[in-house]
Image (cartoon, rainbow, N blue to C red; front, side, top):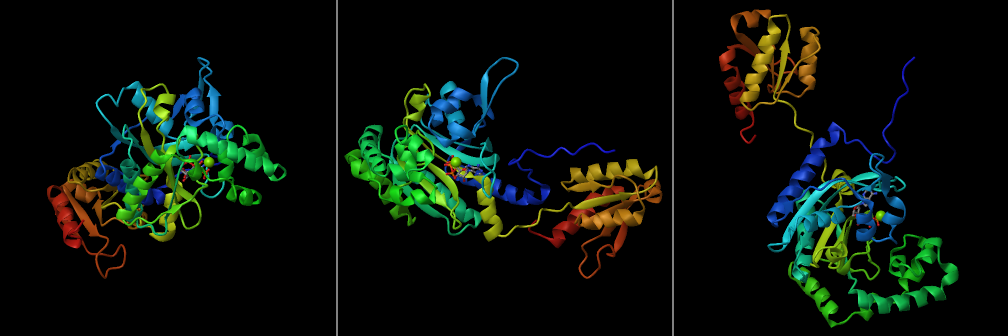
Length: 432
Ligand code: ATP
Ligand code: MG
């Protein structure tokens, strides 16, 4: 009887080696983009105190109300949560280590996030985000900068048709006046409100605007607009952002119902939306947050990108390059040949080659099948004969015109092996 099979946790995916080339390309492009704008990476823990997220994200949000993986540390009773997003942890770290002491900071992060949602396309329970936080800089120039960075990232990834939507949430006092008008509006439609909306009517009516319930769309569409409640300074900030976008020829649409899922935003908010309607990136300004989390008040602005959703777009649009194969596959047989094979492989790696040494025995024929399947440029063959004479046989696997496994071969002294293969590789592909 065999043991029962333990499956992965629902909504939490493995990233298999076949996908690695795509992930690598995404991660390399992100790192280069962040560097191009002067952002430095910060790595914070995956687990934080639950109250950090309750205070930082807001009690009346989807995340805090129903999506957090929270638990009590059985060893010391602490209330902990797997991070559902990256900003709260980064800001906590910045406050704790006083990173704004000598001026503003441009930071970025990447890693897994956890939300207990209903798994579906583009929505998982463990997913990945790449994000940035521009801290200590109040102006719309920074809002424009982070949007431009995203725009460049889509271009560098070869993505097309990612639309920019922006809005402004003004300041808290401006939202208060709007809130009264909103509540009045929704109360006039009380019988048409869904359960979520009824619950949020007095706690967070702004969030009703971004309802995904089709039946609620007309009521949300006809609601009073926040922009009509904004003062001069907020309007000027919004216009400042738009004029910089205009100057860089970045197209956008103002979406008055764009409010973002998190409570801490003010002034500019934005989303990048893919052609299939899924949001790839959400962000905006959150000037109150650092103060709310106990730091010396300082402005902030940032965004979070849903990595899986971007990878889906890349798969659909940009095509996927195959992962890189190894350079050399070492085939060996006989007791004396094994140490010689291990030794040869190590010297080849010293020379910068990627090498797989066959393991698990088998005939030469079956080993050559593996060598072919590996995509290697050359097989290095070491039998007892070669081992005794301090030599190796090189079999070129990717010779033009030769069938796989039937390329020509040559015998060389072990000392000349690495140079021979490196020279042949360079000759075959001078750019590599
Ligand atoms: P949504 O309205 O789609 O639920 P959100 O407002 O909860 O999004 P954010 O907290 O702003 O999303 O997260 C930033 C980005 O992370 C989203 O735009 C999306 O691309 C991605 N994202 C959010 N939740 C998930 C999830 N459960 N699975 C995969 N990606 C996600
Ligand atoms: Mg959500």
